[in-house]
Image 1: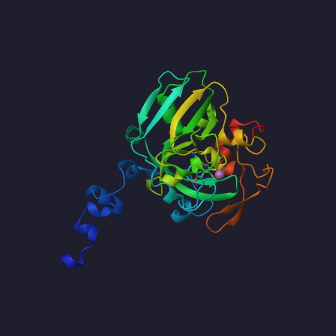
Image 2: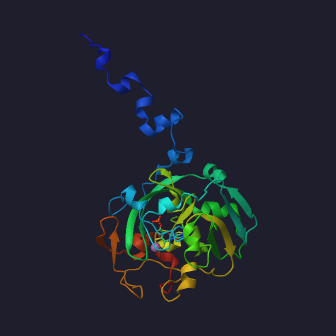
Length: 300
Ligand SMILES: Nc1nc2c(c(=O)[nH]1)N[C@H]1C(S)=C(S)[C@@H](COP(=O)(O)O)O[C@H]1N2
Ligand SMILES: [Mo]
């Protein structure tokens, strides 16, 4: 029997170059030191536990249609251009309040310290627009545990950076800046609650809350606070910006519920950007199995 030895030009590529062709383009560029992607983004594997009932929103839509009142309280489009002065490096996040190890963490330390993964999450604004995004991040619980919260820590308060000279919207509207939000301790420690530094495999764009934000997928979007500089453990329920502005319309919990209308509109339907295709709203945005046990049903 004659063994036919393939000619060089007949060889499949992976026979010729055993290692490299099994790397994807992103990894190849990174190996050559040519990638703009940071190491944490390259190593973040998709967590297959989180699946969607809809396509991933096109990146241009999720990064081009935003709510970030510090940049512009009146518009959702064109916010990237308004963020040109916003400096996101260096950046520190302070852990403080009812904890044994208060500390300030440099963003670079955070990026090195935690096991980054990619998760596909549905995201729903209280105004009814919705999207589905691949976020890169890690569970907030890991960051909180670093500070060793005391038993008296029952809630967590989050604060956004306060830079009126870099964020033109802050001088446009008389909100009680800086933006502030909060979660109950069990919500903050829930494995779904994600600290996020990237989306679509890249660092977060400024208009989406660079360099570090929260993503709380079973709650209306305003709970997912952007550009965080301070995380404080508190013994009582912290005030939140939207609740302070209008307590009738925006509660502390803000869990997504199709049966609980906003005082000015129904929440039964949501609309997927950019087509605004209508979809039924899901209880807890479809995350009931992960979060329902935390609630008695009277939270709002
Ligand atoms: N600091 C800060 N965080 C914020 C907001 C904001 O105006 N300022 N808007 C919230 C609202 S209302 C929504 S719907 C989401 C929007 O996130 P996205 O622009 O990434 O879609 O961010 C939330 N986080
Ligand atoms: Mo929102």
